[in-house]
Image (cartoon, rainbow, N blue to C red; front, side, top):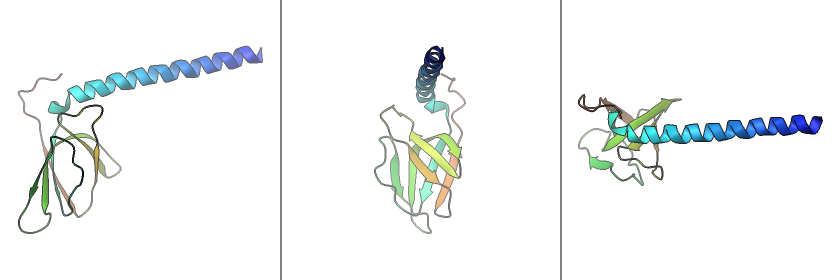
Length: 119
């Protein structure tokens, strides 16, 4: 009897894990398709970001810090004082850049164009 119950519990864990994986993969696919509808993020920093993802541009700012400007990011989410950013043409093999809020970072959020229909 205990073996049957153990097998049933293991089967339930396996089914829940399979469902969660499939749901997450589908959700990730939808998120990747909807990047143009997410706010663009312009990041100004005092320190240079290294190893930028493809599609993100860097320009040097004159004058007071911040000294570097990065364009081409889209906001995925914000949590715990950090912004998780990806390029607009993000793929599942792409990278996510995590930017913490501090005095060396200035952020601008630009709403997506109104003529973009949700995907």
